[in-house]
Length: 255
Image (tube, rainbow, N blue to C red; front, top):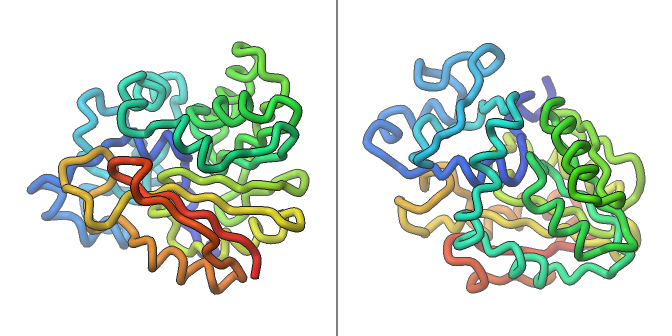
């Protein structure tokens, strides 16, 4: 397939809440995390990831499946996540207009999608995921929480398949799972309205090993991320490395 692992991207909450502490066992298989090889990773088409109640991060790699959204929601939407993810600080950084159209790329169970929908009550949030069960869950959650401006969108591995142009494309803790970000973000750039923005949250390369999220070998440095997206015509407009304890936030715009 072109560019992206079919099961690599499962959305913001999906990857963040895997809470992947780097352990000795992880270190022994880390090279396979880049290639998908080795018994620890298995065949991602047949072996699904399982929610980890203790967030220990064992088996964190690019080939996750996140098929049982109801079970994953117990982990991804655990209130304890707010302590380090600080969703309001992220929304404050984005500062969307109340009528903004926002794409949440890799929305998972909707941890950020619901925050964004409430921040843009006259707008629209396209909560995008490639896992059909996550898309089902997102649609049901929008109804359950009374958010008519939140729409679930089925994406594809190398194309978010957004149904309309957007003002803001948002991605949280997903980028490090994308094998060919230039391919994916070419489609994202095509959907940006004039003056549109891309906002990405990722784990700091130099953050401690024991934090929630991927092991250091899988993290991507802010400078590298900006360099990669420069290839599709995006340039850094601003960033924040202080708002979140373990992550940075970047905002990019078209050249």
